[in-house]
Length: 320
Image 1 (cartoon, rainbow, N blue to C red):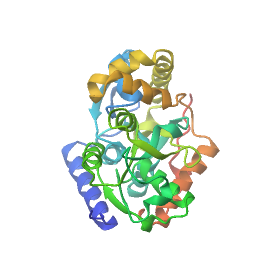
Image 2 (image 1 turned 90 degrees about the vertical axis):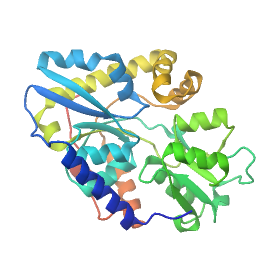
Image 3 (image 1 turned 180 degrees about the vertical axis):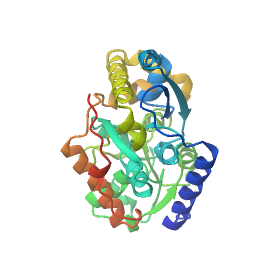
């Protein structure tokens, strides 16, 4: 497998950001009235929030409408946020680090609690590999700059391997699953619900989850100008997220049934994934900020981050 260089990756990111900036008019933040543009993925709280329609009703008294844009993964979503194409997004630990390094426009608004069972390094059920230490010289598929990128680095470190001891194949989830099935990669670092789907349908087994290695947070992020100018919109959004989180926990089967058509994954598998997810939106604590700083320092030390960043500089403290 060909390793993608940092120069190539950064060039691609810059090109996408430039294209998004040209495609979408970057508007000034509004103090009252207008529209909030939210990015979401096929799985997670935001897509369920979209499906329920409660945010639109709660923002109506403020004269604010909502538009939604779907993204394949967190890195692409945050590139769009930095380019001015959306106002709000959701991503895991690693994407905000790269986005902050590229543009100080991004701010952290809130986070969900750690969910370390919701990501893993998988191998085929009949693989001879039995431990992370067995990955030396092997090829691991993963989405570059995602939560599992950090998991892979720290898991290798825990088992006495360097990042350079393995080969990487940077692939989005659908391509990585195909490569995993045909044996083009030896292992796959992936998150739910793709993790649960592979375990359920392919009988893949985990060399390790993130338990005892990394937290696996989910973050809600915003464009700095928008978030700072619209505290009522942000407060309403977080209230709607909290309401949706409560609903998911109380009726996981219904949430899984709602997600099934958008993900293409059967509801029973999604129920497994949702049971491994953590809920309870909250402002970032000093511990969460320190954990994120560790992510940033790790990627900078590997030469994957173009410059050092201070995570605390990008933290908004909204009223929750």
